[in-house]
Length: 169
Ligand code: ATP
Ligand code: MG
Image (tube, rainbow, N blue to C red; front, side, top):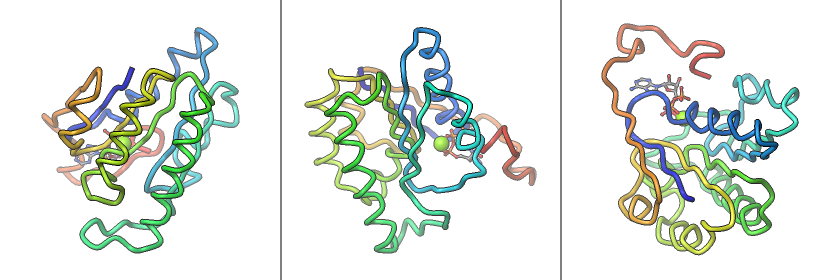
């Protein structure tokens, strides 16, 4: 199935990680591509060493992406990441493949939605695919089997609490 976790509230990436944990109980393997980031201090990046059922490939860089005018380096990294992800999906490299933040990559036109959607439409029967990130485009929502919209009701960020180790990253 193709699952899409989108919306402005917290919980999209952690929901995907929750599925991976649950699936590991059935000896299923998860491969996660993290678009737009490369930070060894993310909890999931630290955790991989002790989780044989979970593989993480961070396919971005450790720098702020300017979505209004993306740096060519970031565009190239999105492209490279997507090419890797396509190969992994086609080869059924894992039971679950998470494309973390792909929704926002599409929403900001860092990759062409039509191309990504047509590949996912053709291959979504092969493995369980989960995409996360704000602003999932309508074309992706149309072909998904499940879409959850995490809506923000309240977030401590607005009262000045920044990203916390192990909870937010
Ligand atoms: P998480 O990884 O915690 O599941 P997420 O994947 O839903 O969050 P992203 O849009 O990827 O959210 O943003 C990741 C970071 O931004 C996390 O530190 C998260 O706590 C924070 N965040 C999520 N929602 C909001 C919000 N509405 N306002 C401010 N910060 C947010
Ligand atoms: Mg996220």
